[in-house]
Length: 209
Image (spheres, rainbow, N blue to C red):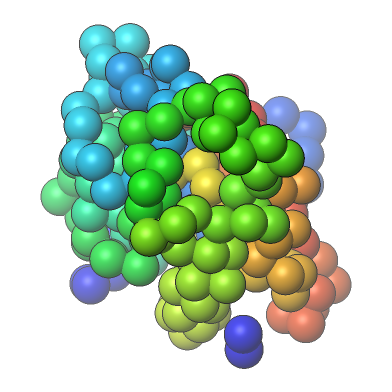
């Protein structure tokens, strides 16, 4: 398709049955100045805002009691700082394939600005000039999915919104363009897993804040 084991600080079930199979917990990084203003932030490496740092710290309690065989992060400081503030920095492994979508010429622009110059544009359908198309992000997601399925146990992943949406689509076997069907807020938690067997990948929970 297309590190060393660590026991770390399972989302409280709150009445929901936990899966008997391994689960992949996805965390979008905390707020940055650009995410708050709607600017496309691909490879520009900007820090969390104070509010973003506080939300990242609160993730520690929200993730308390969960155990993970591996903790992976995008190389961006916004993702890895979120990982560290959530209490997983010492176990976090940076993976280049977890980087956010490369927006190319649209880096730092809002959707409103892009649409003023290119009416009808849609990221997941049209991609970005001098950056990535959905298929490019999907190829990276496929590599991550392959690595995730090779891990025996739960994995915690910190990254950015658009890439995590593509990753969820590819986990389900959907085209990368179908990442458009998902939405993720900053400092949100989502869980991928399986239903009856390993041939039935599912989204178990999504965009929990």
